[in-house]
Amino acid sequence: MKEVEFEDISIEHANELMEIFNYYAVNTFAAYPEKSLPNEFLNKIIELSKGYPAYTIVFQKKNCRFLFAKSL
Image 1: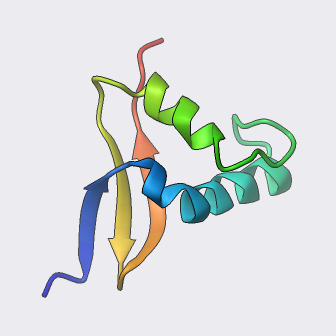
Image 2: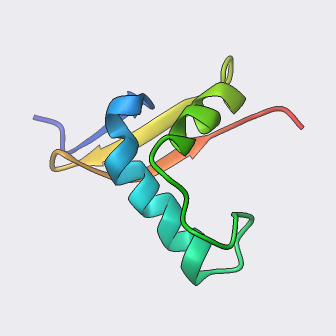
């Protein structure tokens, strides 16, 4: 069994991925909004990354990171 897996981002990951996203939005100066966003915002991330890599990293059956690329 693999300990780390990459899965395509989907709306099924919304709860965990938006929890990660919102942590950085609220607690850092990273390039994110300054407030928490609803889980539905993941749809925007999926839309922006369409045609580019967009993955969640799953470790021990928990989404622990995510990454995506988009055009500028």
